[in-house]
Image 1 (cartoon, rainbow, N blue to C red):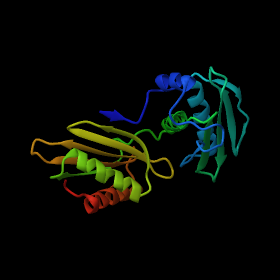
Image 2 (image 1 turned 90 degrees about the vertical axis):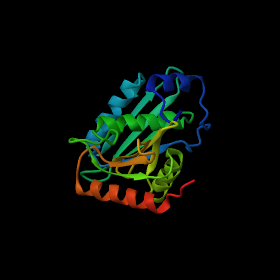
Image 3 (image 1 turned 180 degrees about the vertical axis):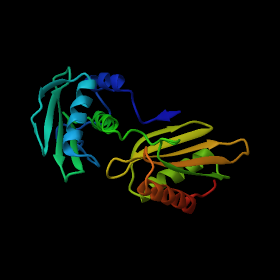
Image 4 (image 1 turned 90 degrees about the horizontal axis):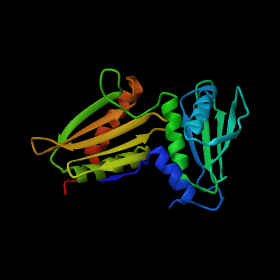
Length: 223
């Protein structure tokens, strides 16, 4: 089994001791993301995300156009989250963890997304749009094709988990809309693949799940 996401407390502990994906303050590991939410709402979510992480907030200046959250870890290293308004409905967020910790910056972004109501993609009556299909390829081959779908459609990969009988990848579109592709071996011997976009139903999400499914079927190569 493998997973790209690490629980918040475990990651914070790891961050204070050292992390595999660091730089020495060059800015390479600053992560930027757009959110389809107003700046005021996104800034409140950013502040809550930092506080939930157990960080000490030093400064939090804000106005109607966005704001900054400047905090520190127990080690004294600085964490800075900058929120900027793009228009009445969109905002941009930059997360920087000194001296450069990409994993923690990514996790803070994921907490911000959850706090503005853009959590993981899900199916069901109150979930996002979804489509599914069954394929002769095994889950491992389907996982490779799913990753190619994310690459072709420019989806940011944020989490991956794989097992012998099933696998799943999660990603985000430009406005932080969550998407997911899940593959699982079925009783028929085929692999059942579910494509999900968003956590509510709308025409944009409906169109995108069709794009994922079509691209998946175009790139799937049985191995």
